[in-house]
Image (cartoon, rainbow, N blue to C red):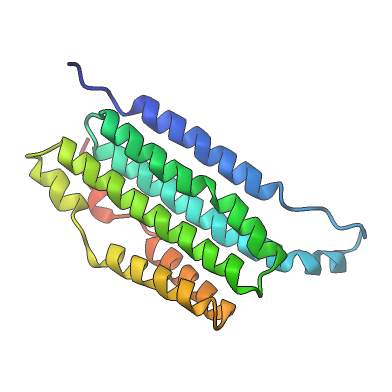
Length: 193
């Protein structure tokens, strides 16, 4: 059976991620007043959009680099990728919910759960790729479990718990994870084609 290339999977994923960003930006409603001071009420909405945009950008960037080192895909990888896209597609919903009630525990906790599950889904995608490319030690060494992944999962769970005590502490945990991942895996970036 002929191996499938990554091109179609990457193109589809790029399209889904572009739609996710578009849906998020549509949550912005223009103020009724035509003054700069009217924009001040949009600051919380802008900040939650910014954080979510950064998260989607991080996943797009890392997904691109991941597929750069993936030589072939199979059905398992395609389904693992769809699993990741499912969780990422929930980001606009939870972002909107946080915008409407940013001081409430449930939306902030749910935001963290979606981020946690997106990270789990990305790890599953990586592991599925490693399994499909068994024997490729370079790929295994590049994608192997590292402290950054474990720290991210711990911070997400901490944020979910904190949401019931302080939504600002929870959001701080989520921002800390984003800061960890703004710079992609250098080992992947430096891998020759």
